Length: 109
Image (cartoon, rainbow, N blue to C red; front, side):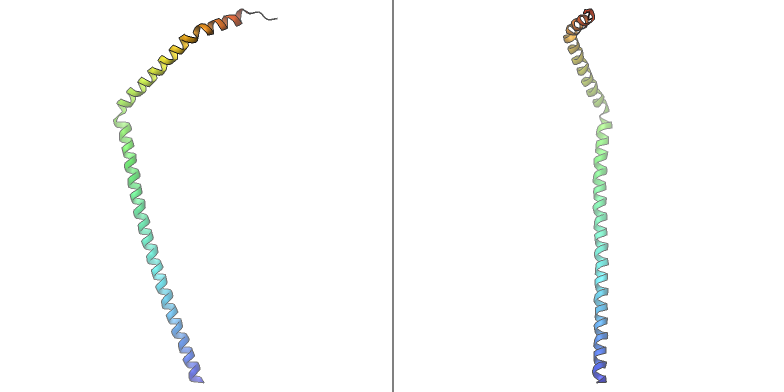
């Protein structure tokens, strides 16, 4: 009876050691997967950052490099709007003057 309980204890110890090896292997595999995921994420972040930086530099180059063209375009748009406003003002000016004269000269009790 002592030998059978001794065998049972030996089996339990062997099973415990095997379980510990399995847990350690799983822990090591998990750490390796986490390290790999972190490296992949850092690589993606670096690529995204480089892409955004390149796009930003392109936009800065477009806006600063063509500043003369932008100024010229803005001046043309401004002049067109000023011309439009003057045209509209001259078109409705007689109506506004007659409306003002009518209101100023009308006496109400």
